Length: 59
Image (cartoon, rainbow, N blue to C red; front, top):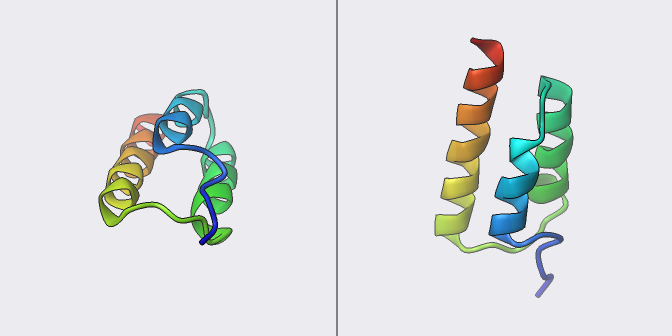
């Protein structure tokens, strides 16, 4: 099984430094599209964090 490129905690930390939609989408692709393996709970937590960060940037 593939190991995640970043731990969930590292991914959340990297997300804090994203300041544009394109940066968030690049990180999203790295984490979700490259078929890295996280638990379902980790995926849900990361998805909520991505959604919230996009909300903060756009408002």
